[in-house]
Image 1 (spheres, rainbow, N blue to C red):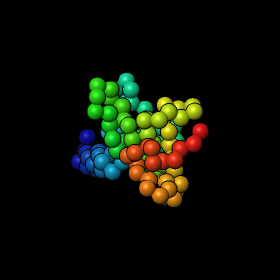
Image 2 (cartoon, one colour; image 1 turned 135 degrees about the vertical axis):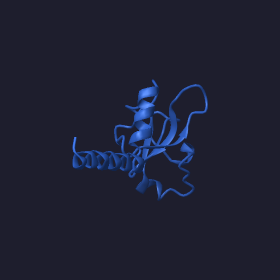
Image 3 (spheres, rainbow, N blue to C red; image 1 turned 30 degrees about the vertical axis):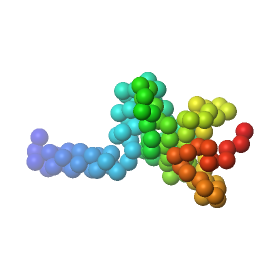
Length: 109
């Protein structure tokens, strides 16, 4: 392999690492590979979903998370999902809203 090809490979690897360090892809990928109970909300993606609070017990699942559009909780189940979601735009209009306290989310069935 000549020097130019080696430099291109090195550059591609560095750019890949930079990309992974700037997104939630790495942590989400790791948790999906190592945990049976870890899920990413269907409304989100591996690149955007960020866990804000993990379960402190023996289960390896998140209690609260967020992405660019929504807040999520597994403390309350949704109609068709093991979690509930609330959009950040709706949340910004709820007086006393706390992202880590689903009882302040004013969720209705």
